[in-house]
Image 1 (cartoon, each protein chain N blue to C red):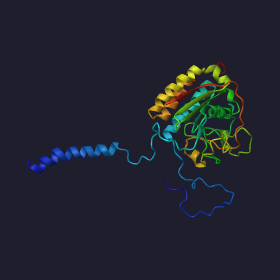
Image 2 (cartoon, rainbow over the protein chains, first blue to last red):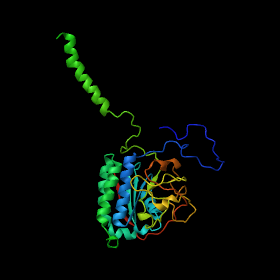
Image 3 (cartoon, helix red, strand yellow):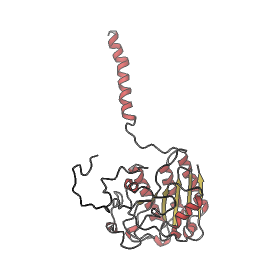
Image 4 (cartoon, one colour):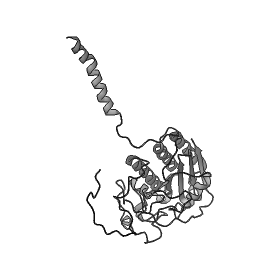
Length: 151
Length: 148
């Protein structure tokens, strides 16, 4: 891939100016663009279907994974009551699903456990994206379509 | 048919077929290693979010931050995505306009440290970042936990 500007550029940057996009190195790519598109669509469509807000965190969760995941859930937006956080820590081999009080009414813990089970099955075979997408599908199927969103 | 021709037909042609198939199937320059269970995960944490519906509803409000947000990204990444075209509100990349447009969940201030700002640039859709999200009490939490 050629860089946007191969020539010497006469920019007007000062000390405070951040690096331009072309100066940034290659992004730390976890997923391919196809995988990102799948995640993107799964998150967006399950959120729109259910009216809940699904977010996905992938990263380390520290020694107390549940506490960390609940902390993240509390920060997941302005309205975490209807938010569902899926926190995956591939390094620790842990996945946590956290539902707010409103979301928990439509997504009982049992349904979350079932989705987690299907996710871990995929994760154990190395398929991170497939597991996440399937888990999201199960969760949104379980949560259903709320009456307020029905048209 | 002498020996050389026999060798060419019976050895050369199968070998040629094998080489062609190998070149077609063996991945040449695959840089990204696939995740295997048990290997360490040394990527910066990322947090992916759904796109706001119509750019207005949802707890997150509209803003540049839709899609995935890198944990520590302080830069405005690409707007919109190929699948969900840019929302009108996404144009506004000014992080000082309104408090609801940030998707950096604890950018830099979260307990697991900041990811690199270049991290978000790889995702198909992602958001700019602004102030850290204030934790909100969500009542009794539910959920599940799994290991593999």
